[in-house]
Image 1: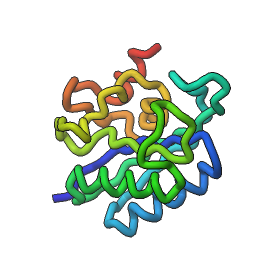
Image 2: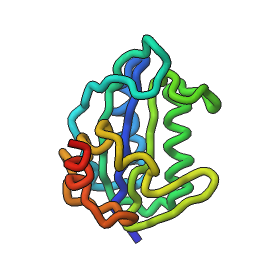
Image 3: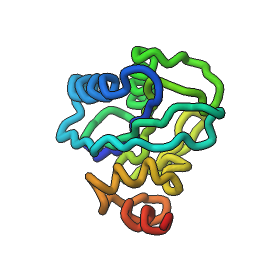
Length: 154
């Protein structure tokens, strides 16, 4: 069964745009279809060490049949290939960050993955790019759309 997934992309070190393009290609190779990517947004770092560079952020949607934990493993592998170490200080600069925001209407949580992403609904740098390409996507835990959540942030 294919479901719509929504991912958030970010990075603030190295050639972030190239990393984003590699993510698109790798997802296509993995069988994700109908991929749509938002514009790239430049955003100030949130909760990062002083002097951190601005982030580039984007969102993408697509249809996949990759189980959620396998999709997470693919995202972590793509981050590693972009130069992000497996273990790093929280909120440190990074060449690539990929978060699974939504996976169909799944509500799921274990030690390694929570869907919907637990902080997505309060992060403008996630909601604005996602609203550009999928404003009517519903967060199944709240029943609110991406646009409604973004509007709540003011």
